[in-house]
Length: 220
Ligand code: G3P
Image (tube, protein in one colour):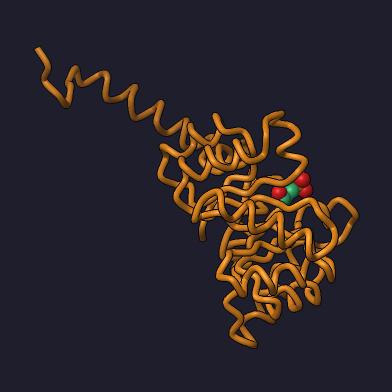
């Protein structure tokens, strides 16, 4: 599974990029508004820092303008993935941009039928929003499972980018369901590492080691 970081906070990305665990970044207009900086500056800085796909979302709602915005965003760096919403206009823009060998991430996906259309439109990534489906009492993970079956049935290359991830269980279950990518907020990535028994076990190891009086590096 690939891990993307779901934020426009450049400093948070910089810190996590040193772990070697980050395969890409996703942003959206709400995350950019939180960063309170020009979108192009944020995306350029992230694309310089992280070699994997960097998703930057168009804000037009008609295909011609989406395509124009998408071409501009894609010109920022070779690893930009243009994000378009799952609407008819977004699918038309996806087909046009993917036809020009530009990576496209089709976002705001909430049904398997939407995901099927995005794959047919040439999407590089489909972003089903798990958390927002859970928020309304639906089963977000079932959507990942359904998309996986459909894409495998027809050999679609579109990668399933599990999004709207709120906790470590979402990551585990998305991996079990066969998602290709999980895009996670920084705090969820940190949560993946933590387990109380790991902390407890390490404390016990170090306490017992200390009684030996030894050091591994015999520095004078
Ligand atoms: O960035 C796309 C998606 O991950 C947004 O998640 O938490 O706003 O539903 P969320």
